[in-house]
Image (cartoon, rainbow, N blue to C red; front, side, top):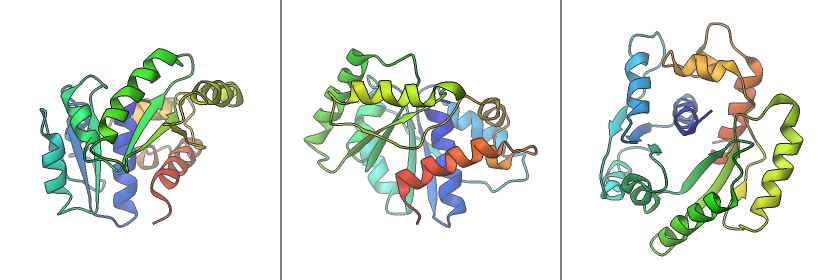
Length: 203
């Protein structure tokens, strides 16, 4: 489960919690916009989305924050202008990390980018969410991630994680989230609920 899946699930969860929320597609690939286009024909609650591009995303985010209680931003990678700009306005950056991709140097590069943003956004939180974890390797995945992150105190490892489940791929292809699927995967729903609660609390 990648960053767009997390972003769309968090957006729907914030809406269900009674918050006014805007999904911001700041990824040049436009995956969140594609997801929303598929969602329009479904009998589900619609949520607003806007696209942002370029090096001034942080300015646009601050303007939109005047109109919504929550903004959920889906950006490109660490080297994109949109990602770096969004960090200047974000409260929390959530980085999905798959087992088997625990690369010290890749994470160190991400730390370097985030620490540059710290100069302008000193309250920025940076959290890692383990995703696509094999069902039989949850403890091992957490242990391996914790070992690497022990050398990177800038990151906080979420207790919540998502296991590799077909439900996440299926719902993304339908413009839905796991809780909206006709045949709900209750474990997938619970996992995303825990991710949402740990990031936003219970409000």
